[in-house]
Image (cartoon, rainbow, N blue to C red; front, side, top):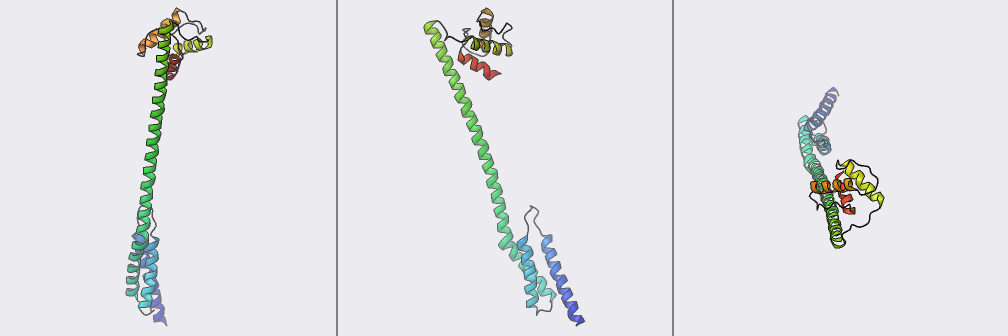
Length: 197
């Protein structure tokens, strides 16, 4: 009886040793080795049965090793591959989203620039044709004066009246920004100055 108890204790110790050996081979990327550990335990139990149910240590160790290998190949490796594939898919999606956002931003910026250019061309054409600019409200002129002041081109009062100081400031701004120098305040000019702020 005591001999059987020693064999069972030795058998259980061997199973525990096999499971610990399998656990020692755990991956370092955060994936659990459920298949390896489960296979080792099942293999050790089967090895014990094959060894005559008397806790044959060699049969248990062999069964544990074979079970651990089978669990690793059939369960752990496919899960690990799936995990890495999902990570790569997530990385690619984040990269694609970033590219799409940047592309959309560039398209919007180009559209705004195109609208400003078209408005500027229309304003210049209107001025050449009539010799006048579209009538602006005093509020719009005040807005232009404040923008010119904020950009450092104008020192006068923001009173909504286009005087020589305002006209000279507009010309200085146009010259500094590569625009046609005509001294006229237009909606396109106001939009251009707002974009500079």
